[in-house]
Image (cartoon, rainbow, N blue to C red; front, side, top):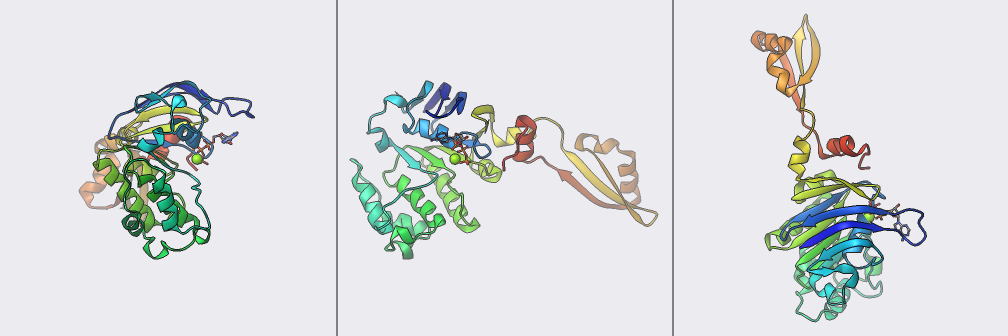
Length: 284
Ligand SMILES: Nc1ncnc2c1ncn2[C@@H]1O[C@H](COP(=O)(O)OP(=O)(O)OP(=O)(O)O)[C@@H](O)[C@H]1O
Ligand SMILES: [Mg+2]
C-alpha cells in the first residue's frame, strides 16, 4: 500500500535535511504509527506522503503512484486529518462538512451521524470560529472520513482531547481498520501507539531508529525487573532482581517459606522505556 525508500527532505530555509533517509513499507489493512518527540519529523513525513511536500529525494509510493507525481484525484482516495485543521470560521460545522463533501467526485457520507458520533450534534450549527481546539480536532477527524477513503493519514488524532473524546476517536480509528482501511498515524503518546498500531516506527531527528510491533518492542532488550519486600525484625526490607532470577533469590524464597512477604511488583517496560533505551531520547 505504501513503500518508502531512502526519503530525504530539506525545507527551503533549513541548513540540513529534516527527513534523513527514511525507509518503510505499510501493508493494506495495517495501522502504522510514527512515534517520536516534538520536532522529530512526524508531520513532515505525513506531508510528504499526502503529496503536500513534493520536493523530497528518494521514493515514496502510495496507492501505486510516486506521490510527488500525484494528481488531484489522489485526494479522492486518501483521507487526511491535519495536525492543525483549517475550516471556514464563518460557516457552521455542518456547512463546512457539506462544502468539503462537494469537492469529491464520488459519493460521500451523511455528515450528521458522524458529527453525532464525535459528540458534536448539538454544535453542528454553531460557527466553527466559536469552536474550541478539541472540537476542531474532532471536526477534522470527521472531515477526513467523509469520502470513505481507503488510506487514512491521521496526524496526532487524539491530541488536545479529553479522555472520553479520545476514546471515541480511537474506537473510530479501530473501526476503520476493521473495515479494511490502511492507516498511518503520528503520535507522541505511547499508550495510543500501543493500543492502535500494528507496527510502530520510532522516529527521532528525522530518522527511523526501529520498526516493530509494540509488543515485540516492549519485550525486547533487558529482562523485566521485580521489586519485592518482606518483614524482617519488625521492619520492611526491600529488594530487587530480574524476573528470570526471582526463583533463585534466597531472600525471596525464605520470605515466601516464612510467610513474611509484603509485596511483589514486576516492572514491565513501557514503550517509552524502550524508546529511551533505543534512541537516547524521551517522548516528551
Ligand atoms: N515549513 C518549515 N520550514 C522549515 N522547517 C520546518 C518547517 N516545518 C517544520 N520544520 C522543522 O522540521 C522539524 C520537524 O518538524 P515536524 O513538524 O515534522 O515535527 P513533528 O515530529 O511533527 O513534531 P510535533 O510532535 O511537535 O508535531 C522541526 O525541527 C521543525 O522546526
Ligand atoms: Mg507534528
